[in-house]
Image 1 (spheres, rainbow, N blue to C red):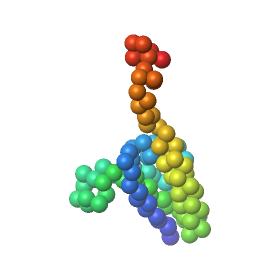
Image 2: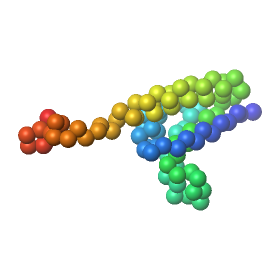
Image 3: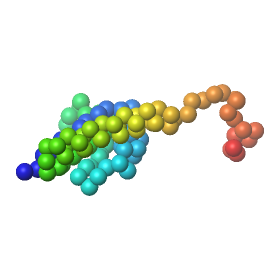
Length: 97
């Protein structure tokens, strides 16, 4: 018998979070983005990860690892969108670094 878990988390930029955690996925995992265009309005801006494992302990271990990876991805994503520092960050022609 296969054990399954679906983890749905909402984010301001779910595509960014999904891209950040996807490299850590194993063959038993699939991560997608639910943009809320379906019939369930509560699913707006969600990252959905489905996990299937043959054993309960394997499922628990994979879910635990996923939650840690998700927390790291959220922390890193907070730094992915730089803040405008005004003219201090502008270059003379604003096209070169």
